[in-house]
Amino acid sequence: MKIAIVNNQAFTLWQFRRGLIRRLMEDGHDVLLITPAGPQSQSYIEQLRGLGARHVALALDQYVDPTGDVRFLFELTKLLRTERIDLVHNITIKANILGTIAAKLAGVRRVVGLVPGLGHVYVDRPGIRAWLVRNVATLLYGIIFRLNYRVWLQNEDNLEFLVRARLLPRKKAVLIRGSGVDLTEYSPECVDPKRLEALREELGITDGRPLVLMAARAHWRKGVREFFTAAELVGREMPALFALAGAAEGTVGVARPEDLEAQESKHFRWLGFRSDVRELIALSDVVTLPSFYPEGVPRSLLEALAIGKPIVTTDSVGCRETVDDGVNGFLVPPQNAGALAAAIATLLRDADLRRRFGARSREKAKREFDERLVVDRVLKEVYGLPLPALPGKSAA
Image 1: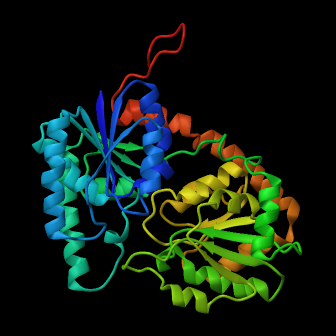
Image 2: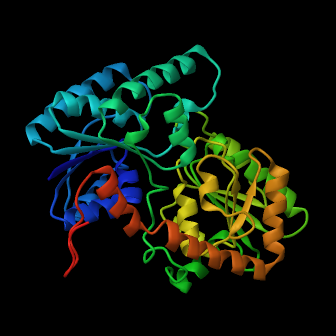
Image 3: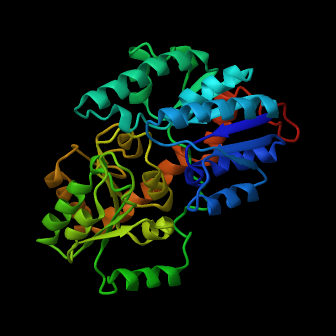
């Protein structure tokens, strides 16, 4: 089949979907990736092409851009018609809306969508513009989901919200938690110890201080304020470094770099965008994400599970999927820095508890989030494709 995947970032395709893309190529499909270009995207585009997929750059802004959105719609329709695409897989809200319309205009027979999380549109922000964008998005969701063959949801909260709101027919909804994680690429043994020593020196924790890591975009609703407040609370009791690895990019709800830098202390550091998040997770003693954002299933927490780390996160949409409370980590109330600090401090005081929780995290990753199992389900339940037969067995 000729399969097109439409997304608003080459980085997220490489980071979160390369296992799916690699599998499609191995199964003999012709895969066309459609994302915006740009200096920061070029290296990821080249890596995606290295998997054997083709790539076409079409400009698509993350936020509302009427002129640009109409241009993208016409260009995408023309491309899909010219390529004679059999199946289109749209990812994120604008790609889902515009990509579905373009695919239907181009005569594509099978269109599927992925809602990795409801995202910033459904954040409860004041103002007529936010209200208008949210309601227009809701109206369009109600239309395009009925045009989709299947819609992949990554957590039960999102699925039930869309079904109860009558935006998504239940028969078209497929619940597959997260995008999966490559358990060979992310494992307790995945990083060279020499690289970990170099990171310790870079972060100034060669004295044995524990590291608490938050790997996420520096968005206030990801829990940035609660994270650096917890750093100060824990720091009054014990030495520890709380490190935030994530870019301060975007215009809606994102912390300003100067605000993050102003919070830096002996307990808290902002590392900015990092390409070595895997190594930082491997170095960390506790991984946390105090988010109250409309998440899917956060990738950083899946990676932490696979590497075998104890997790502290919020009992919130998407985040709660990664933790069995008191088994491999702790769930704390959203927007509660005191509870966050207390849970992290409990783990930092008890190395044996961290080891037990970490081992159970790895077990949970194997049981629920193995990328191979996720990709199999996507191909069969979302795409509606027969799985290739194993030797001596019939196809699924």
